[in-house]
Length: 373
Ligand SMILES: [Zn+2]
Image 1: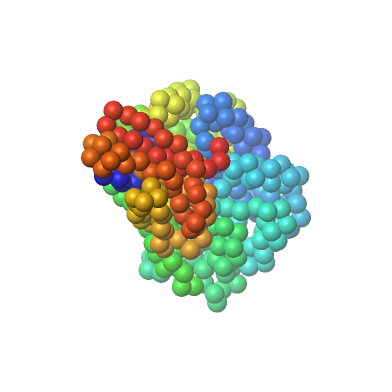
Image 2: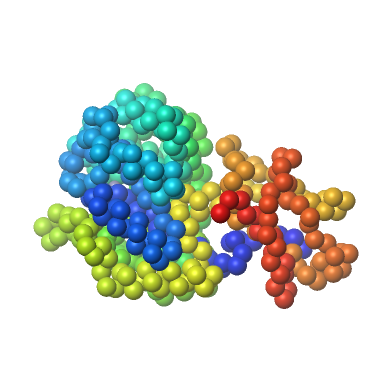
């Protein structure tokens, strides 16, 4: 038997944090990078290119307001994008009072081309006046026009060109439990006739304020993580890491020192322990989604003569070499013995060899593709 492992060896389950950027100050963002770095947990974040501050009063942005001029933080933001610390465009900005047009996406596109920047993910934001949000054909009660070619907010074609592959429409795309069997990815038709890949997130606290720092430990229950490992599931936790709390009067307090509550820090430490003990794979959302999509669309055949596993991928138009990273094959050792010590010498895609690592356990041999760090 040769088969594809559900998760990269040796992990049993996978999780990611996916945070919408509203209210995040640049100072808080820099501190939060440091916190996850300290615990050695890979987390990538979302950003606004424009900020109207209509409701989200404190959020940093790449451009100054909606002007198209660079903000003070822009060069540093670019470095962080290149370092993989931002993988998500959060609706281009907080257009909670309206005002988005295609021109905004064009400014972003020019900047991305100029500096060789790309993103994996686009998430929808806020009020119905955010006409730039992207849903899909058949999504109810969503006045979204980002993929509507006849609307001034149309930008889906531009957004795909800067790498975006995965879309989060709104709270219609939620998992009931972190360990439920809901697939993470779903294929839907966009209004401009393209197969869009929608992803699902888990939002705890049904009936309560959206996830924020004050409830971090409550949203991510330790027992849920153990159940996630038990069912070998995948979960993307929906977050608002820029919000300390939602006040009684409905207003929001931005995140500030110490950036997590005591319980929050304890939970992060537990998550880090599960990751470093190799039970739970933590990955940035973009990379986790790429991995999941590649795995789910992968077929292969083993060529006995050349001892090569040959890969074929269907349904992913923009598949790239590095998207095979972490794909793991499992070979049953009994099968190996009875088939004259079958062990592939190479893994190949479109005539290119993919580097891999070999791990032996008592029953199985694992071949894990390892591209880059
Ligand atoms: Zn938002």
